[in-house]
Image (tube, rainbow, N blue to C red; front, side, top):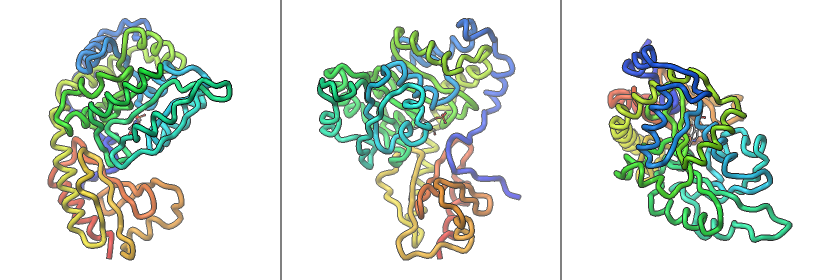
Length: 355
Ligand SMILES: Cc1ncc(COP(=O)(O)O)c(C=O)c1O
């Protein structure tokens, strides 16, 4: 059978040979005692690259966002976030379950931003009936909004509002390096106005495990305690950090290829009768497309969607894997390990989805 071309997510990326070598020779210590030299090296490197004072390794992006928000927000306060944000949709309600933090969802526009006036008017006045608005979170790039990158100018404007209302700004930057590459800016520019940022080593950067939180020394000091409370203190975590160092040194340069492949894919889909895509919205490695109204699904596709009333679910057509995220809407993600040739093969198969 042909190799599987897995376009469901960039989370399916495998560690590179160089990562596996680095893992097997990593110098280790107990990271809960801050004594793992490889973790310390990764955290210093990440903090420097993002222009922040300090950094903290966590097992996942979900824990990175949870630890950050728990650190910024007291119980019973309110956080503003987008109605299509990953933290709202896909993190199992952790901020309310574990932090007692009330979330207020504001409409995400197609480009992943939230209207500035909507943000201003959602901030609560001091009144005994209201929870205090303690923070806002932005997502960059924005997963559900076409992988859109948010610009540093937009982030600066939101940060100004946050600062002048005594609120914190957290960025869920699971794919912040995709954002920086898409906009052609230094990643530092994208996070300079934020109080904290989480980014993932395990998505476009291809490491097997791990995310990083960056912020001030004081913020990371408190975040470390919250990480411990959530069970995220990982002892000889240098085996994870070793691949993270390779990810930061070697993988950022490959992100442009993933974006080029997404463009190629988008162009190909646009040329398939019965499918629709807004090519202009695709700026990074995530793309969504639809089956046009009135177009029939192929027999293969109809069979797979039978009995599936829960979205998203996997679509498997020949050896091509991707996601149907809502009825007739599909997601494809390019990543390390997906070649131009794979994109062409996938397009050939996707063409058979409609008839
Ligand atoms: C935007 C965004 N934030 C956070 C996460 C969570 O990362 P993890 O899967 O490492 O928990 C994801 C995962 O896909 C994501 O897309």
